[in-house]
Image (cartoon, rainbow, N blue to C red; front, side, top):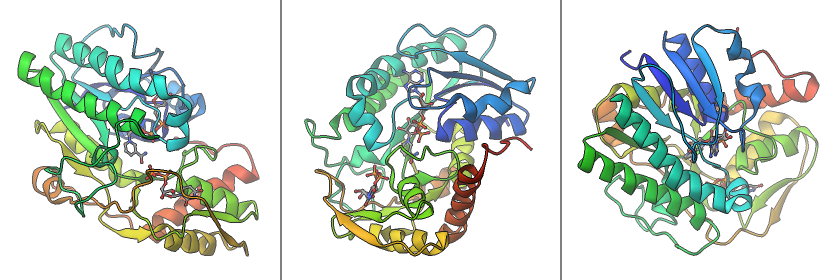
Length: 321
Ligand code: NAD
Ligand code: UDP
């Protein structure tokens, strides 16, 4: 692995904490920078005992400096669930704009590779399906998701301009819906919501008629793709996600079955601008990163249900064996 000393901005979040763990396991030194806006200290607490790990509590919209050399800066800092970013619209825009600028400058000063965690949301409610990287998207700039979509689109533009102007060694990944252990039960995203509802014996709330689709990637697969991108020189954007598409109603049935509870599925109003379909074209990731997801959906969901079940039963499990 070439990414030996890595700054992980947003490292105390769902994806970030898994990435920190994976990098440490691969022998890297990790500096996690997070202000715990939507992440949790307990996601990284078990890592604090490890020699290669350092936690910096910082808001990356302000000055970010790190002593010593840095090989890679990865920018995952941002509210990411629709419930979070709608509750934190100004913070979401700020971290996409000023946060990206601060972290690009850090990478430039250190001569480091910079990788931006962008999102499938840059495609908005897509009119091209599945979505290849060449698709420009269909985004409402003043809609209820605009603070997130436009923050990420701006972050991509800023990253591209930094590369062109300063020669910063940048990369952009567009991450599609990812799920797994350590998602917050209250983050509003579909997988933790359905699992938590089913495990508590409550009705599972499907938005609209549930015919809208998503393609769900297990966190371990996603982190594997991300690490490959850190170690590559490709500028991207590169889609990372699962090509296995299913409807939200199918997902609800699958989760209810895995939880083994007899709970009803109820239909609730669908939020405005909720994308109707979403599936990545992952040809580029296959070609340039030799990456494709490996974990089957039922298997990944069963692992995730197991994690939520354990937490419901007792104290949080130890994250590092
Ligand atoms: P998350 O909310 O669990 O993690 C985001 C982390 O960023 C949190 O720990 C939060 O405290 C931190 N953060 C936010 N603003 C900050 C700031 N100003 N300064 C320092 N830290 C800050 O979300 P996640 O699901 O782990 O997503 C991580 C990244 O991946 C996000 O950038 C998100 O847009 C992107 N992404 C995630 C998915 C997904 O399905 N999980 C899909 C597409 C893109
Ligand atoms: N959804 C749902 N019930 C819920 C939460 C979400 O039916 O309790 C739907 C949501 O309307 C969307 C899909 O699940 O169609 C995925 O939503 P999520 O918030 O996980 O992510 P998004 O892909 O919309 O960013």
